[in-house]
Image 1 (cartoon, helix red, strand yellow):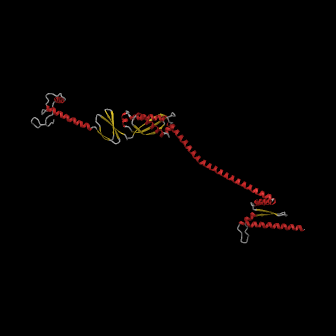
Image 2: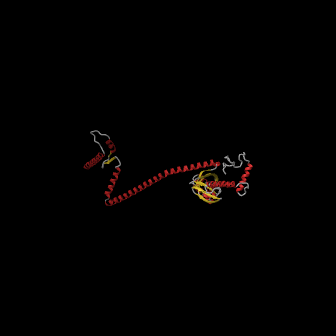
Image 3: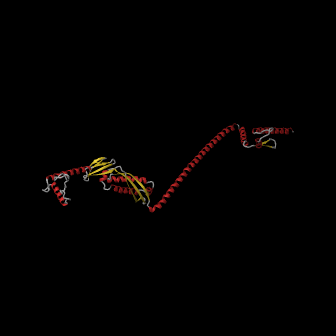
Length: 384
């Protein structure tokens, strides 16, 4: 009912509480009138209420109900982004998984949980544990994951992220407990991370958490602080050992090929000497066999030839010539080395230049002259 509805023969607005111009309404009276109207709406109204007043109250309530219904329906619209999925529960029971776009579900009846399935989430923790060789290590591990199944993530586990952390701790303790301290602290960290990721994913699949582990990283692995100094000494000793091994290997790589080359060279030289000796022996044997055949044919001539060859080979190595004259007591000595030295010096224009051919001719002439003198002396002695 409008407040400005004309009544009572004037144009003044009408008090909805029926107070008119009497001043502020009485609260008790207003409450009584409201109760009377509500009672008439539900069949319990007072007999003093008029029929027109009851009809107007019902229309207002109907309008209010329509407005409330429109507001309720409008509250059911929501937007699902491209990277999101919505899990719809109706009175706590799973109904559907909505896809990206504009969606509508009855509010206060359906409960929609929106989850980002492309966002990479991360959880990290630090643990102290025993290795297989009964050493204590401290490991910091980080796990990256995405939501693979929104329904399982919402419904199967009460706190999926806490379950993920507990499962990661269990998997890490299992893998580290089966490895040595050196593997955990040095070269085995990458393999340990892969093993932890595989075991963790198996645990999460068994729990039906709806989580997919994308990567597991061991950020840090070290011994406890109490034994850090001793471990540093061990690391230095291991580095010194590796360095010495590398130096020894480098020295061996330089010495061994050289020794092998020297050995191969000696083998080749020995083989060549062997072939040379064998060839010389075979040649000497063949020459001796040929000489033996000639000696059997003419022994005297062969002996003389052998003698002359031997004398020639001996005298060809010296620069001195000694001539023995038959029938005489004098031995003539020709210093051919001195003559050769003089021939190498510069000579005057009227002097004879002596070379090796001249020395040979001179020697032959002297020898022939001595033989002639000896023959003449023998003839004179025979005539007397």
